Image 1 (cartoon, rainbow, N blue to C red):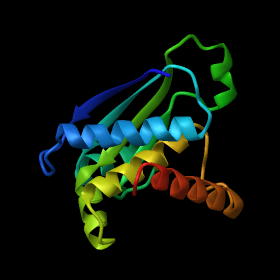
Image 2: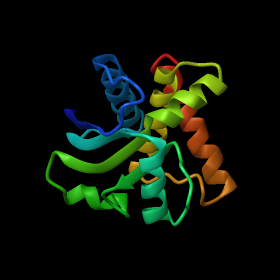
Image 3: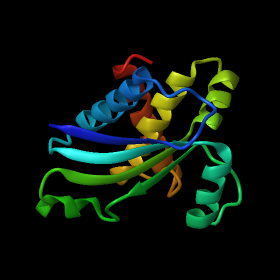
Image 4: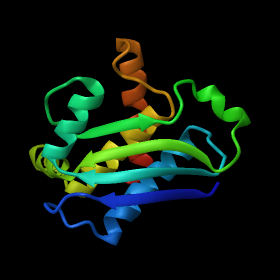
Amino acid sequence: MKLTVYFKNEQEIVDVRVSMKSIVRKAIFNTLIYEGFDKDAELSVTFTDNEQIKELNKEYRNKNSATDVLSFPMYDDFSAIDGCPEPVPLGDIVISLERAMLQGHHLCHSTYHEVAFLTVHSTLHLLGYDHETSKEDEKDMFRRQKEIMEIIGF
């Protein structure tokens, strides 16, 4: 599987280094492998701040608050990728690095750890998982996140 990730940095609070981009790629790649996704894929990752993600959250989810990550899947029904030519466009991930830094500090782990977690979480959303649909779906998605984070070393 070939994975192409397009990065965009729209914030100035956290320094986005090659090492952060590498962790994001690793998190996406390992999530796709874990899920048995074997097609070439592409997606975008935008790093932003609390103010900008709040605007996106309000516009797309009607929630007037900052959040840590937003996922914009390309497909509502993931079975539609069967006939899709490769690379398969999976969608877009938007991460508030400001929020990730604060959450990492609060949870006593690094910003990189938190960014990896948010990336795994968001990639699962791009693949059709949703923890807000039921308690059972929430348990399933959180189990997957935990196992994938262990695979990538967190």
